[in-house]
Amino acid sequence: MIKQMQEKQIYNIYNQISSKSGTYIIVFKVNDYINLIINKKEFIINKGYIIYIGSAGNGLNNRLKRHLIKYKKLKWHIDYITINKQVEPSLIFYKEGQYGINIEDKLSNLFYLKFKKLDNLGATDSKMPHMYYSNNINEILDIIYKIDGSLIIFPNIFD
Image (cartoon, rainbow, N blue to C red; front, side, top):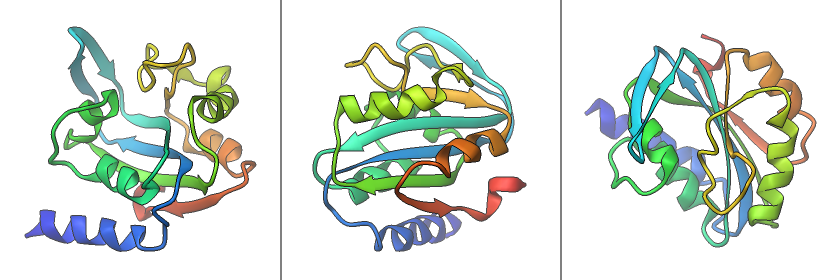
């Protein structure tokens, strides 16, 4: 019952996002360390925040919904993280319109020097990482607030 309620709330949030193309950044809160195996490589991610950069050519709202649902077929690197019970969404930034690897790389550059890269996870078609780690939400927000787009903040962001 709780799972259904949580997913219903997620869907309600996305009613405001169009099904057009666009670029996004999702910040996930990691409530306790997690140990993952992705492509036969072990990753230990400490309590903190994961920043994930992506885009969708058609169906931005559906792509964002997919990233937030816990029960799904594992397809992308981010799926191995988002299905973990210690991980929950804290923030979604999105901008409808332009999408693709070049736009994602430009956004990634904003985080590149300041945050820990998660071993080029998040983008197999780019030399830039599209997934980062930080334990400081305020530093993440400082960057995101400067980008033109829309923002959804979840209540748990500062817990």
